[in-house]
Length: 572
Image (tube, rainbow, N blue to C red; front, side, top):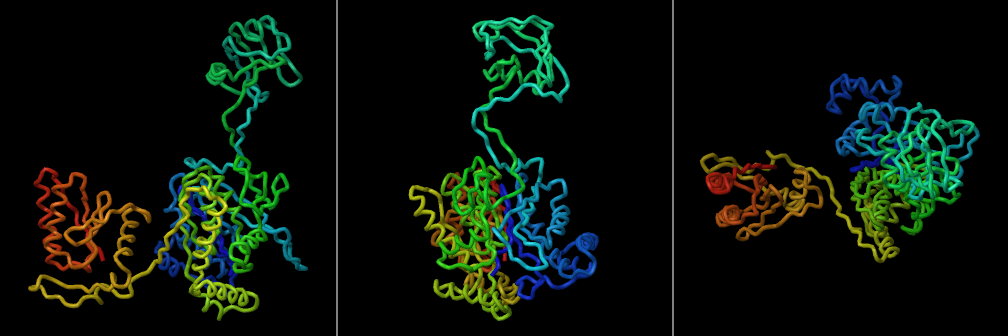
């Protein structure tokens, strides 16, 4: 099974490694068909003008290109919606679709939000085929949600003390006022030079507009001096005040710099770094990402062998180090990282390893639960052997034959390994597994009877039976913006459990009693900290009479001291 391309969403950051466009029959996502403008507009719920623009991004008649773009377009739109204003998305891609991907991203994220096209050296050596170039690289296309808010990708942070010249020969000439009191490193401790004299070397000169007077290595009177200055007057005055300005041994002016200096990430991510260090490691200098290598497919194979005890479970895997360094380049210690095509869970392991030190990132890994048995039947050759190997591995670990199960196994094993390597870490290395499901019956299918004189309709409760209260609650918490780790409080209302957080009270289970309704009203009236303005009711669990009873009793609160107006939201 090939490790899929990735995307990350930063601040929230999106990291996607989308499936590359092979046009092969074994691709679990259909990429081998063409669309008309009308068909594409219908499938993506967009107008025909937008559909035409998508299809125009590729050559006319190229079915595989068009289908791949159709596959990517809605996912990129979703990724954009997930990104915070200062967020960023990384997309790994090969040569087949790199040009089309950039055009697509220009359309979705806008051309002005393009950050970089990084080139990653993925192999030590490629396959040697007579008529082909040896391919050892992949591209990582990077876009921000809003480049004006994005702080860029930082490859190096210099914290050592350095000195910078205060003049720049290419700048215009002007006069700067230098206050007395700055230090002098001129060879003579006591020295005077008269106004009008010139301090010069072969490329630039300074003209004294007042006397330069140095006593005991200190400038003892204010100095006006003309030159091609790098810094404005306000900056020079501030540097002098902070003791960062001094006269050099050649009578020029320099600035002492102690605060961190940031250099942008280089767009070439080499397997071996500047120090000729390979990428097979989980440690690196965060202040100089280019010093060591960025990892390779070979390194990732070895990571699999160590973690799983097997090699070749996924082909062309991404190394953990690559992900760790890319995330580090964003220079934010608290992000939510989303991977749309998480494969074996490389991104999750990278996030946990960063968190084991000092970061506080969260990850959301999304993976289609690909049926490996079905994939095995349609595969052939080496791919068939790899899928069989993966199926056998899942069997040996008592897991079903779904691709997402490998990612779950990796997260568990990686968390254990990280804890053993970092026994003092306080990082949360746990995770929750969610499955996206849709009920297999419509609301009308659940209608048992409708008798108006018997106060309405009664619905069966199969959704709770099939999925459970916690599934419904989690779905609503995410929908209402509280996220997967919301600190929701379970409250006992005379034997009936409701769930409260912030401005929401969720009532999900069936068989609410009159005593429970009375207890809910009492909670509003007696507890000054309880102010749920929204009561969310699971419609399948409530008959009409109980819903009306609850509404009637809570309506009284608008006439009380709290003056609350309760919004009722009945959901199915």
